[in-house]
Image 1 (cartoon, rainbow, N blue to C red):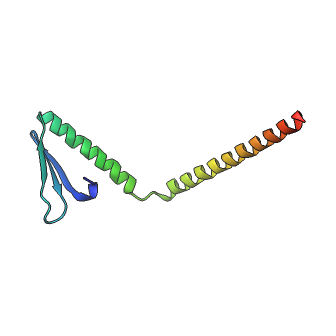
Image 2: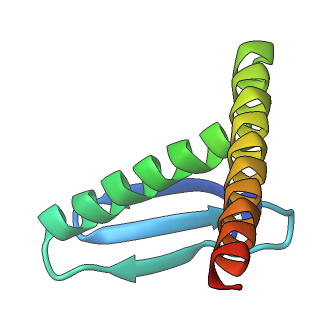
Image 3: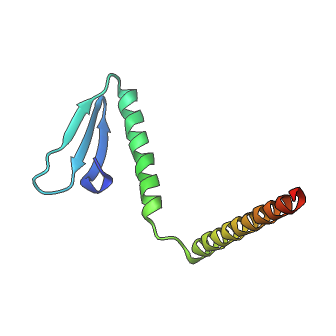
Amino acid sequence: FSWSDIKSVAAHDKKVILNMSGEKSAAFAFYAAKSSVSKEILDLATGNHELYMKRRREQTIEIQQMRYFEEQQQKKQTRLEIRLRKAQYTFDVTVTK
């Protein structure tokens, strides 16, 4: 299921319940072998949802600027490496003549 389809996740004893969004959607429930397993599933789902929401949040201006700066540095490094390879190739060709 995608997070946009899930309304809530709950765990009661050995039962894990996913309530789906939408008026005609039924709840999806299953049973774990132990109540500790159902709690662990709930904890994992909660953590996964937090990461999902963190990725969807809009980035601050500072983070956008840092990413842009990093991309520019990578491009600059790549251009420098290409120039060095070309210079090395030119040097090799003139030495072998």
